[in-house]
Length: 421
Ligand SMILES: [Zn+2]
Ligand SMILES: [Zn+2]
Ligand SMILES: [Zn+2]
Image (cartoon, rainbow, N blue to C red; front, top):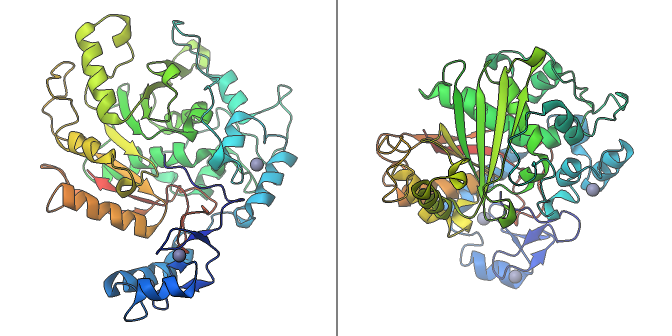
């Protein structure tokens, strides 16, 4: 996940000419979507017409005009300033729990991935302890009390896939009050669910049959490490018997956690109905793939958590594809079928590129990402046999705006979805 700048300290925008922080008082006269530190830098960037490159300027002007409505906050509390939201979490008594401090709009962006307290000790067998970890992640008091505004109702009746199309529908189904800040924790798990259960099936990639394994490569994991058990929400919404396996991969996964895995399961009456396994891998996807190939060849313990075949989905939240050079080899590897050269083990090889869905913070970021995909994979931006996914607003985007993204364009985490299917 691409880190957002802390909303408190940094100036809200950066000058498009020199990169200095600025307050947005000086902007491109054409679109109003680019900010500058001073009039001299505005004139240099926007000369000779008084607006920057005409095609870009017109596109960004319309993005700015519709952005606020497109990314409208879903609940009244989402309109509070980051400082107020921070105080709200503190008043609810949950701010200092790892998951919530990582989700705090004021402190979360600067939070480092913690040591993932949910993981069992190295060498321990995967645990099937769902409820305790889930409640610790949600910080539900042991006495079962607590503020109804944020308590989660474990085991609430889960509606069918079609019913959960918005935050309001999910809150109603999960027994959450509209005043609950739960969406701060749930936007990543529910975005993943939305992609698996709604976006992929709409493009000819249905969920696997009941009682099967569903494997996801989750690229660029960062803050997610602080709320791993919340991905149980994804698993609980999937059809009964589905075992969801999420491989969290990224340079921000601490090296000490590489290869560690944890399993949680829903066990009503001792019978497994749904389960979630999360495995952690340190490094960029292409380097992790190479390491998997080596470990597969070596066999033994080290190979235990390695995925057996091609994933159902490769998911890259808040990816910033054009911003990070390391995406290029990863995207080329994915387009070639997602297997490192010489790695023939484990099935799935030669089956074509797995679906790749990314998110980014604003329309312009999604647009620039799609241009990069088209340049890497001409002409459509998708590998052979796959179709590009038109950028679409994500109904489960982060409910509060993201600050510190350089331009005055409305932005929030997981705002738009794009990629290929
Ligand atoms: Zn400047
Ligand atoms: Zn402009
Ligand atoms: Zn805070």
